Length: 587
Picture 1 (cartoon, rainbow, N blue to C red):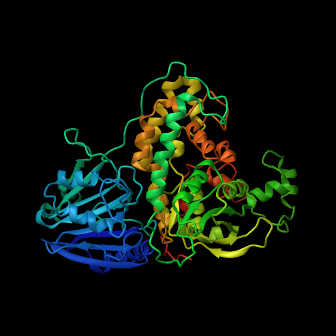
Picture 2 (picture 1 turned 180 degrees about the vertical axis):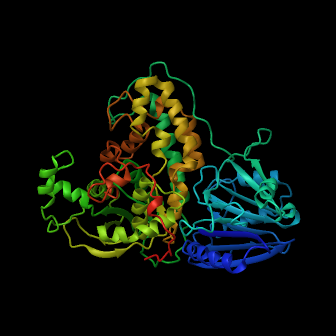
């Protein structure tokens, strides 16, 4: 994991003003890579280019400083992990390996094809000195953040950054699209007349995919459109039907490999022998439990695995518990109820995700008796969550809806990893801070396997054809949704999130499967959605997890709708009126 910051300006820009903004952005991006940082400045014609990169060492035997440079003047800022497509030995640095391949490419298409051969999350900024061109891109799924500010009259400079400092008059940021590789011809840039027009004229969008010479990881596969006539129903999870046996085995094989590639060879940088290097964002749901179980197969058996389980003190929930739901009561009775003193109520953190997490902890202990599972109870008092809110809003920017905030605040505290552990269920808790730098995240299974309730609604309206269409929409939306936001929030703690379900190999396998092998909305809740994954979980022994119903993180952790009176607040509402520039004082 790394932080990337790039700026391009002409001599006409006020250096002191931009330098101050750059320093603030540099501090925010340094938090992503606390192990090493460096800056490279060059002049190209009348343009000043500044490359900054910070490094969180998660690959190789030693640090290799970024930005990468060579004697020809090429420069690479790399924030990513190569898990396939290019052979990278355990002692090698994948950024250095990629840089050596990019140096050999002379054309934009060659660089495009080089990036298309990579399986793994990335954001990249590459300067090709011979052609005076700047290439920048994110992976096809958008698993790493990269924000862009295009030059405009009031802010006539170009910025790229992994994370910002929140809303600020010095830029207009947006997530960089994943649909192409961007190429900026710096040699042709003019900073007179209309800087916006010149920039757009010099910016080329190179399509990721060339049908004449397709690269394996250049784009996402389309959903299989085969419509089943009358597929047999799964009666229960205890027995795998013959027509699903092969699909279950293949899913386990693909997912097991994806997890192995994401947990093996993690350097022992900030940990000592016997400490966890891998953690799971753990709700006790089927996704996170399956990832924890598969990680157990590949993490050193003498090493613990941390299960990060977050719970929030939620005054609105406390109000409802003490007073009942008073929303529909007459005003007079409502006022009488509001006088009840609930400040003396004993705050517990028995949120839904805590309860299911503890149940699945016991199932994992039964199946993996030799493993130490650190179930990290991350309890967040209301006051602490509100103090962190400006920081979280700045980190997640330009995402800024109520739902963004409720999800981001849960990830922020989970990634921080400060909590308590118990050696036994009834033992006294001991303070604990997770040292793990790699966090496994189950995101992606609902989109790929039909885990959302709306798939059931689609089926009622339009049958299997409607399900296929909805699955395609979900797959198409993944790069535009919350992966960039989650990356910005989690990486601010010097941690890296890895998504085994979103390996392009797993995505390709599931996309090509006929729909009725993945999900069956004809079946009851807890069986039909993500049916294939449920059968796989049952096969490896995760009996309780296999029938667990879906629950959104913000509701399972109680991070949503915290204040009394917020019960009707819609997740899509913007929080822009509350957002202000923030100094990222990470605690």
